[in-house]
Each structure stands twice: as C-alpha cells, then as structure tokens.
Length: 114
Image 1: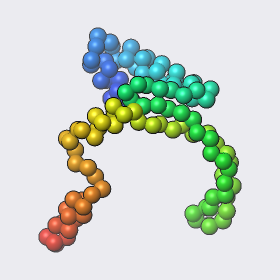
Image 2 (image 1 turned 135 degrees about the horizontal axis):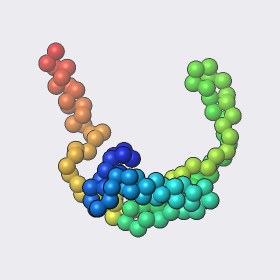
Image 3 (image 1 turned 45 degrees about the vertical axis):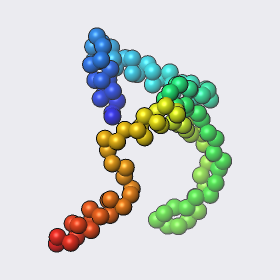
Image 4 (image 1 turned 90 degrees about the vertical axis):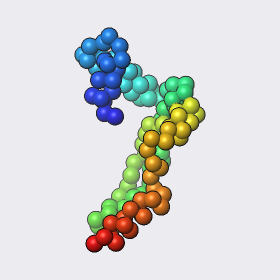
C-alpha cells in the first residue's frame, strides 16, 4: 500500500474528503518522524513499536573497486511488529507463503515445457 492508497482508504471509510485524509496522514507521519528524531519510541498497541537503534562506525568495501570505505556511526529507525498484527498476518491464508519449494516446482515445470 502506498501513501496515496492509504489516503484513499481513510477517505473512503469515513466522511473525510481526500484533502482532509491527506492532512491526517501527513500529521501522523510528521509526529512519528519528530518523535524518532527526539530519540523517543513509538508504541502502537496491537500494531508494533518504532525505536531508534544506534550503529557503530565500521569499515565497509566499495563493491566496484574492493577498496575499504569508512562508514560513519548512524542512528536508524527499527520496527518491531506487535503480537496481534503478527498473528493476524500469519492467520491470513489468502496468499501463499513465498520462499518455499512451490516456487522451484513452478520454475521446473516451465523449463520442462520448453
């Protein structure tokens, strides 16, 4: 789902215009961004939590040249899914679980036909 699809979904659920729904979505995202910038955590019960994790500097490598490249210390947002959301997603069987042997079988069938 994209941001514009989220705005459409919010506008479609209530008596909000698209412009109002966009304002709501932008306000929520801005508030979340500002909280993370202040190193505050965000906890949405049943959905998950956002925190900021610090990472130490390290020496990386340029993939083209193989030369070492210093990577500075950084702080990045981290999302931990909530128990209820995890259970809801896992219980929904509308889509097949990807990454299992079924994907390989389909590729084998296609190559057999050639």
